[in-house]
Image 1 (cartoon, one colour):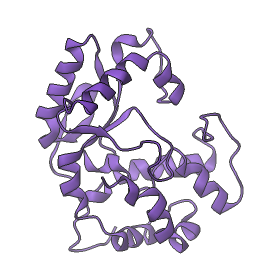
Image 2 (image 1 turned 45 degrees about the vertical axis):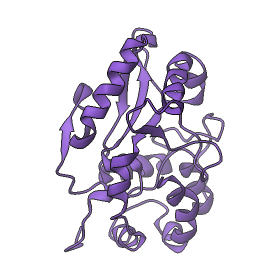
Image 3 (image 1 turned 90 degrees about the vertical axis):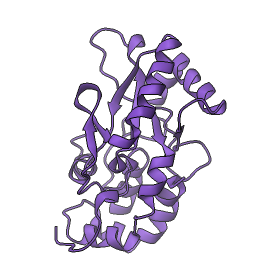
Length: 226
């Protein structure tokens, strides 16, 4: 991708500060001390904070987007139920956006955001899906622990960003971000650069996304730059 002289780290490219944490997941090195403290706090409360997703490069997010568009990955409704892949490009774009970020605009590109569950509550062999049903079911107590820690300012800078009433992406209790670090990274984000990235990509629904990028950003990108 030819974008000479542009800092591409906010878009999931050229991130040189990544380090490996749990099970090979990558995060920005600057959040590790805070992640360790949150993990220890969870352990002291009887939980095993387990990472299910962390840094995600642009190409991986693009792959997720395109595979959902082709029906190769499950496309879920707002209530988390599997749905048919719409044939209309506009309808398909919004269906994917219900649960997935636009490639290049995912907070997972920053290395400061993680998806977490309570490993101690997972039945043996269970494959985590990261759904609202899990949050209100087997992981309910863990998420209450996180909520309490955030409310008491005892979460070491981590907070939820996909919450009710903010933007149009469905709430994700499992997604937490180290906000003091992510805010610095997001200062370098430019919608014009994202447009140039899309123009050079093989992104599904590209025509609709490019024609409506400013509106999509208002609903699905900027509300989560907190």
